[in-house]
Length: 366
Image (cartoon, rainbow, N blue to C red; front, side, top):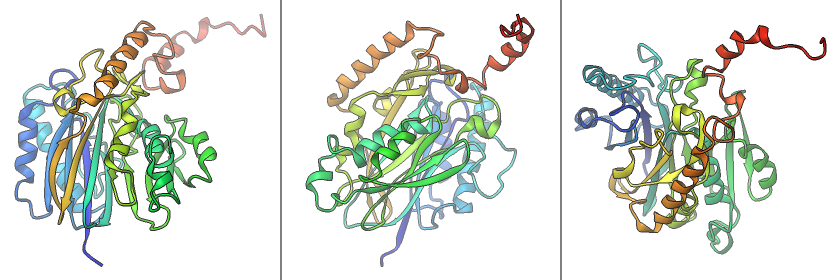
């Protein structure tokens, strides 16, 4: 057995520049400076998608390590101080606690972590999204790991033919369930087709049991009890040699599927695959964006990144996303552009309902 490497992707919105569109360079510089030479980590990469700072860390301390989580928390707090000095918008909005309490989960920042023994060649993709929620990964992950029309390896690669096991989380009742594909495929689709409540958390190789993918499933509104922004999830996918090929893992994003989020976290919109350079959503604070950074791990070192969506092959997806955005925007405050009522409980809807309650007439009594 070789040594195990942990990759942790931890993100937070600690202040937008300008509005909710991007991250000020001073915040990214501060995060990089605090990670430089830190003995806890083997390697790190700091980036952003929209107004979220994303920390990509490799280390040997395993998942849920308090020191790693403390490090990330301290970085976000330090960046928040700069954000407040610059009067950046929503400074510190993802930090729901006044002080770190041992584990960053439940405190606001989103996190995805996986631990594994590094293979002879270990290509990984870190997907990062802005202006959407954890369930946004459901359709792409289903296509990567369960759809033979997307991933031909499920048909012709002996190392993949047996399928994968999916861990699905119920984000409302805080439960989880395991599905084995392909035999549980139809049952699983009943749940993951409702991404506002059910989210794919982890995927495992059915034969080896190795971790294949992990995503963040934090729901900010549920933790805070109020609207504090969308969750802007992250996801890690291992590629090749028994897992989807790099191109199979990217292919689902050639179709900009509809996700919840966009303006004020209250609208459906197309998930547009973009380069880091274009990850600054401005039109109606959107449309929602997804970035894919590819790395080769080498003894825990992050060789890369390659900005995988900075490719003209995704130009048609971006055009289609813009066309979908044009169509949806014309619906304005009407569903299905605006989210359904059960997703609007953290907006003005409860207050308006309370204010007008005496003006509703019960037709059964009239």
